[in-house]
Structure formats: C-alpha cells, structure tokens
Image (tube, rainbow, N blue to C red; front, top):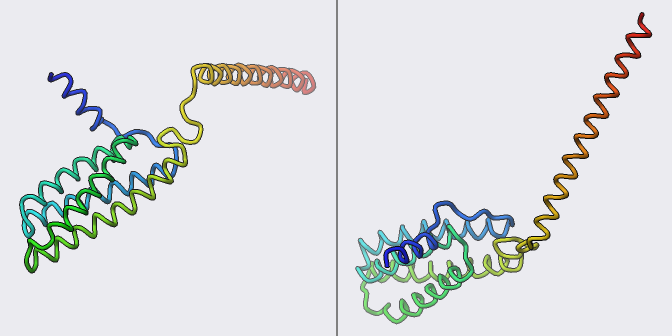
Length: 182
C-alpha cells in the first residue's frame, strides 16, 4: 500500500521538472507558476477574510497547480481546468453567503479562477498543437534513435579523419618549409 502511494506521489510531484522543448511548453509552465503564486496568495486571503472551506479549495488547487507545473501531464492539466470550472460554479452558488469585505474578496477569487481558466486553456491549446511535452517530432522510435547514434558516430569518425589529414598536411608543410629554409 505504501509503495503504491509513494509511486503516485512521485508521479504527481517528480524531483525535477520535465524538460521542455517548445516555447509553448515554457509559456504554459510560466502560467502555472503565476497561478501557483496567486493560489497561495488567495489561500492566505481565504484564511484571513473569507473562510475555511474556500481556504481548503485554494490549498487543493495550489497543490494540483504545482503538480501541473512540475510534470505538465495532459490529464493533470485537463483535470486542473475541470477543478477550476467546478470552483467557479460552486463559488457562484455560494456568493450570497458572504457579507461585505469577505464578499468582495470572494468575488475577486472567482474572477481569478475565470482568468486562470482562460489563460491555462489557451496556453494548453497552443502547447497541445505544438506537440505537447515532446514537441512536434513526438517520441522517437528505437530505430530513429539508433539512426541518430549511427549518424553521430559517422560524424565523429569523419571529424577524426579530417583532423588526421590536417595534422598530416601540417607535418608535411613543416618538412617542406624546413627543406626550403636549409
């Protein structure tokens, strides 16, 4: 049981962020970074002004946003957008329970959800159209990887041959210069 939970945890929160090859992926990660900062800020605002239940929603969204920031898995991003939609509709239903200042900050929180959903949705669309985490080329097959290795070996061997030929020419040129100068 603990091994399963550990595997799930490290799948959602890897030790290092995934390497991105497209500018769209970098932009999506930047959007998640700003959303994470704002979720944490709204967590404290909920703690101070709004209430306990919205605070729990904010901490859940910030944890999920951090998972999306690290791994950018498509299912996690889609689930994050679904959580935002659920919180928007839940917030609209709960808006009449608050008074004065807490109502103002709760409405600002809902507007933040709408803005976050807008930016994440369009950044995700561009990210998806650019090929996702692997870029337009996608995952390479085993033969393509081997072909890449073969090309690298040929390039390395060719450069060694050229270096050897240049060294031989330099030695020959030195011999000729020495003979001529004598």
